[in-house]
Amino acid sequence: MTNPPSTEERVWAVLSHLSAIAFGMGLILPVIGWSEQRRKSNYASFQCLQALGYQSLGYTVWLLSYLLLIILLLVIMVALSFIGNGANNIDTFMGIWMSVFLFIIFGSLGVYLLFPFIAAISCALGRDFRYPIMGNRLARYLGYDPMNTEEEQIWLIEEHEDRWITAMGHISVIIMLWGILAPLTAWILQGKRSLFLKFQSIQTIVYQAGATLLYFGAMFIYMFGFFIFIALTGFGGNMNLNSSVGIVGLVILIASMLIAILVVLILPLFHILGQWAGYRVLKGDNFRYPLVGKLVEKWQRSAGAKPQLKPDDCGLSI
Image (tube, rainbow, N blue to C red):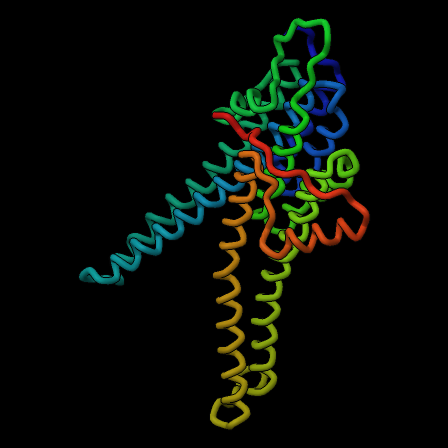
């Protein structure tokens, strides 16, 4: 770098990277750091945006890897159940698999947290840290050049900053509840400056809130059916399923379980659409969620906001 970053720049960069240890709750800090340092420091802005991307994308990859691992475990268990001595095979397999599974869980968690610590140390020393795979691509996308020697300051590409912030907000839908923090913070701090960022952030908040309410709604439906079942059949060990009241309670329980399972099975579709929305925003689209986008746009017009700009062609070049 031509000029070493100041103490303030280093502090924001270090805190943004270390916020990864908060697992979702830390999303707010890189957004605040970027909002505070944009048009003050390219170094701090880039590091904050990079930290936000690592938390959003890294957590997504980390979680999906666990889900694939669990699915693999279930497939192997089913396969073993059809082989001779299925019970013994499953018991032996489970003993070995649980050890491997725990090793993978804690090992991958250690790897996930290792990079933010390395990033924090590097930034504390004033170095220009780049995450593997993502760092250089993001630098090109934002127009970040730490070796710039021109007298006139060239800032990061504003539109690409906004697109990266909003895209990570979309992608963070997979982070239950805490994923709302990124778009909410961006809207509060930078919504007045950018209509695009404001619209994308608001619809992301509404969309994520809907997905979260759907999840807790499924839990509520199941618990409601369970308590109705207990109330109608008796508490403790004196359950009576022979009476008509007991049968009604059992039917309510089964119905609530089926509804809750159906809702839980639908939730991954919300996550997939959120990932797609983030991708489309990076590729240059002014993405609108079905129904949610129109409602937010209608609310903005009623509030006196200007109409959204049409999608442009500036996307993520790889």
